[in-house]
Amino acid sequence: MHTDIDLFADEVLENPFPTFKQLRDLGAAAYLQRYDVWFLGRYLQTRNALTDWKTFSSARGIGLNSTINAAWANALICIDPPAHTTQRKLFTDRLGPAQIKPVADTIERRAQQLAQNLVAQGQFDAVKDLAYDLPVNIIMDLIGWPEEVRSKLLELADGSFDPCGLENQRMHAGMAQLQEIFELTSHIYDAGTLRPGGFGWTVAEAARVGEISRDSAIGLLLGYVVAAFDTTISAIASGVWLFATHPEQWDQLRANPALLPQAFNEIVRLESPIQHFSRVTTRDVDVGEGITLPAGARVIVSYASANRDERQFDDADRFNITRRDGAHLGFGAGNHACAGQSLARLEALAVFKALAQHVRRFELTDNPRRRLYNVTRSFSYVPTRAVAA
Image 1 (cartoon, one colour):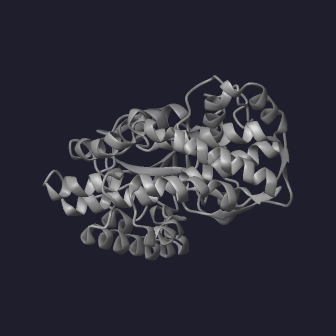
Image 2 (cartoon, rainbow, N blue to C red):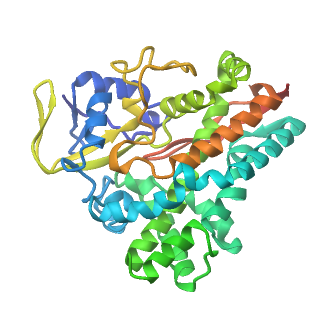
Image 3 (tube, rainbow, N blue to C red):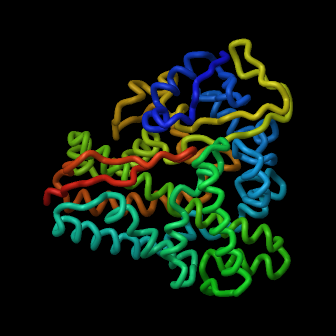
């Protein structure tokens, strides 16, 4: 169960799934000697860790270095109940299914127009021309960011989870970027320029009436930047790539649009935008097969590895939009499950619904390119041709 595997080597980040299988096969947990951390990559152990915050705590940070854990001390993702419960409610009060329903028509209209434009255009980049569109044109309005900072916020959000990795070049570059986001977000909060009625304005008002502190409000606003864009963009672009390389699955979806929710779940399962975060154990914990994690251990909890675990999913590496053999962990689980997943689903389902109506098939016109990140997985470029229906 001890290994020298370098989980953050470029060749592993390019295609981590064979390495994840190696680690899963070592046992219920694997000790990564070069990092002095444990790795949970099987589905059962990962789900158990995510749903047991008292044992696998976020309160000492979810990153793999002390710098980001100190910087994000007030971030929602790095606190446990009871403080977490109060702050998360500010997210869910505005981002739950019922709360975002009024914007569904706007998102669907935008998605329809986008699909028609891409078909007319013929060739496009599934990242910049497709996946970026809704965050730029819809989500910025929902959150209420001032117009003059929107393009900068989107630029800075790219790779903003890199600081959560090991202390490497990507981590240091990401910290500089994160500092820019923090300074910009703090300025927006202090200047009072968030649009009234937006999600961000709600957070700012909560701080001004004393429900939460200024630092907590800025931490929540940072969460809107970091979580609202990067992962949704990744999922949509990955979906186009998967459908381009598995045209029979696209045919199935077009023939039966009711499969849309399952299809999106399968995209997130197979190409998990967030690969992993970490936790710290608060006690000795038996994870099975005679392996006990000691109290105070830093543990990588790998959503992406768990989502490919053959113990949970039949033919786990296959893209299958009719899959019914278990809930994926791509949005996490437990009290730290993605607070914005309803919005992500709404965006992605609208996009693929519109594309299914207008696109008969996708064709890659060149090799896609990935940008390597410490924690997230996404493409930087997916050159695509849309063949009209």
